Image (tube, rainbow, N blue to C red; front, side, top):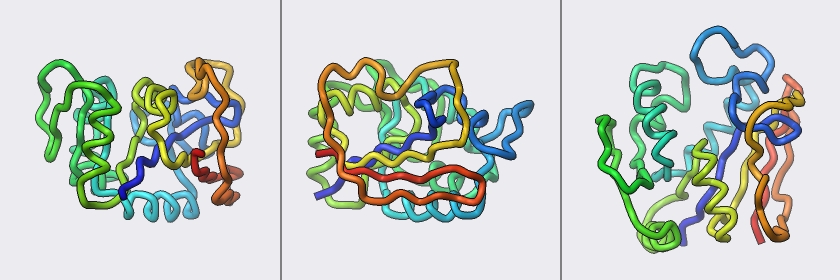
Length: 188
């Protein structure tokens, strides 16, 4: 059966709103993706290589559908532009983006339907509100965090607001040359 894999870029203290701030070498004055070291790039390539579908929240879709179609930031640009994107929203999409489809209804029903189909992993990228609701509902199978070596007191926190204990099993933790950590957990 397919897995739902939540992939989040975060500061060490769990901030998630501006990933460019969390990784050394990122350009803070230009609207670009975070700058990754070669190890992070390879790990991201492996992660997305197992995914053939992505769940996005509406806000992330609106933001990314304006940015990624003209981006050459690899490997993510080719992946996100080509992959099947299911956008969780109650309103029609107003922006065209290859392989994007609006899906409405219960998030649990949407995930159950996608997991029942044949295919690879289902990624959840960005989309913090959606990611939090998936975690709260127990619908995430694996959690992958690219943790930047910075403390950021600003913005939302990924795990803020969860109302009960979540047990995780560490699958891997890989330090990178820039001081970041790539950590993957199975959600029990």
